[in-house]
Length: 276
Image (cartoon, rainbow, N blue to C red; front, side):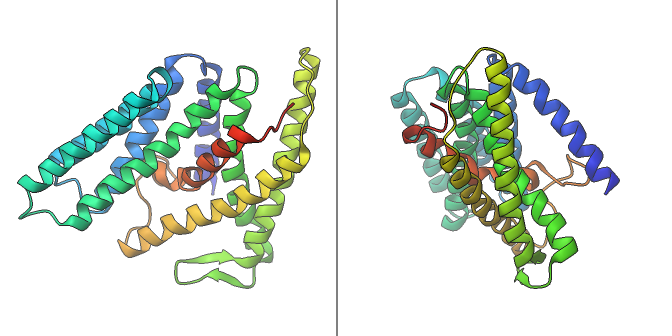
């Protein structure tokens, strides 16, 4: 537990430093690094690293897209993606005796899912000059708060197993408590953010109905992301995706919920105003 807490403190500190440089390429570089690590953990744990050309394309895609999504027109993003898939198809034809179609599909799908989800963080940051960083914090907090709250609520009050065959420690009480506590803490953060910005001279209103919906829906989505990652680990007989974060595992072990939550918040913010 102590190792887990210390790692979390270090991670939060690094995260704050990165957010201070949100208007620089450092932010994109960190997102790209995380995307590459997530793809690496998926491919290495699912026995895909032996396909060298395909792996290289996946890593290049994950490293470049967080920059391309900000600085290039959308048509070039499509072209870049299409070229990457084309190279993987040609390589599949060349290696058809050693590679199954299922492996090809997994590599393409997992790379697209992880990278596009991480790029949603870049998209959120660029949505609004004033609130962009807040959107990023909300997306991360919405995923992590419910997960952390579910752990503690489940530890003290959990009695009914949620999905015992996938994640034996998760309980229904923990899931419900995690969603509710996560939503309440998220709304408290948004309220505090509004007050701080008001003191800086930026007056705006908050749609707390939207904030509550975001907190609850993201809490539910974080459960889906977490259980999906747990299922992948169980099917491949691994405890964690990596060891880069002591007490937490790999990058994907910490960002599994974010990969589901971040796209939802991004799409929602495109059409619904949280601040006005």
